[in-house]
Length: 212
Image (tube, rainbow, N blue to C red):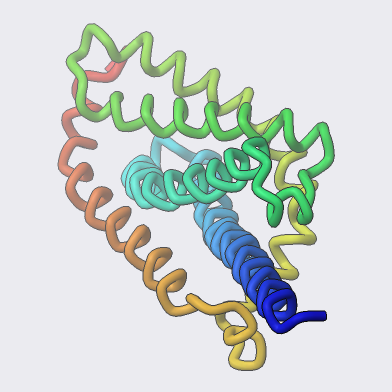
């Protein structure tokens, strides 16, 4: 083997390792963010049980969810696009089972509709409230079924990958742990700011809601 051939093999190996590290980084970001979303969604679910009495925390947690959900859509959308565009590293990782591939986009769209309609309920005029309230409730019901299957299908992966950027013995296995942590933290801060910003609209919604 010539020196040039040896250098080409080393270069190809470095490129492959770098690409595989990018796939692993995306998976860690998605899993860490998903773990936080599970906690927030569980808290939001508690407020639904008595939403009239717990409307203020319901709204606040819902607004906190918005940036992490958008981050989740971005990270999974990136993997989706890279896989179907034929990126070798993402092809080597493979795709989720067919059912999860079909449910993933549906769950994502329903989540965006649910959150967007929730924000809309706080901001639009009284004439739009009945329609948005129906959309909000319908998207919740449809999303609940899709997300139950989606979460159960990915739960093992989330528990396996989510801690790796946060544990000293594994965080250095894939570069970029700190930027990923800061990105998640920034999404939560942005969500908290959005929540405090829109809490002032809760009273207005209570005064103008259908039947109120």
